[in-house]
Image: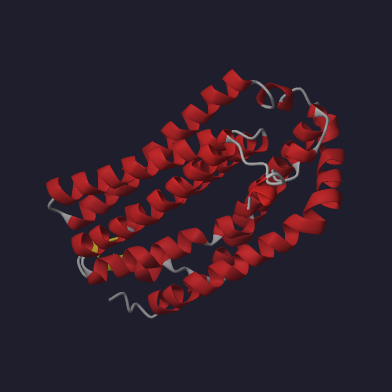
Length: 277
């Protein structure tokens, strides 16, 4: 055993990071379980079913761009020059923006040409509850989550893993505290659901502010990113696709799409039949 340990690079820093990863993962899992139980008990089966349906609807757009920044950031630490690291991350941002914009435009065209698939016209009311603001708040969270992913990807690229995990854990704890407060204090279930979504949106905005402050303090990738002239963006896009997206990130993104379909397709089918309970 001692002979084997000689060739395993175990250090105090490694043990601290492993402990932080396990602790953060366990905390997220526990908070997710408790939050789900509280939501079901607070909203009731029908209203929670409607919430699950709209959550599945809102989860569709990020699968086309969500994993791109995180997967590309895996290549960045292995790149020797800072200039190339910045170009890879800029390429990831530009590809995400293109995919996001294309998805929004395509969705608008499809909904305009095929009125029958405008899901919000049939499903905005569950019993006496209106889901209009629930849907609006979930859609507003999409660009906020996208920016959060960009900044988190930058931090991972410069190996600030401990800060990423700590900030994610703090967000989960604050989200749980918000849910518990609403569960205890707010009697109207729909009003409580809207307050929860507003609170989560504000928490994400606070997280983005903290990311911006920390990246400005680190200064390793944040400032050089804006130094790349606009005329070089097209070559950056092409290089990022050829060397990273086509070989690794594309298949990874496809895997994410398949996983989401497996998780959310039954919910979407039941929701389309208005079988929320």
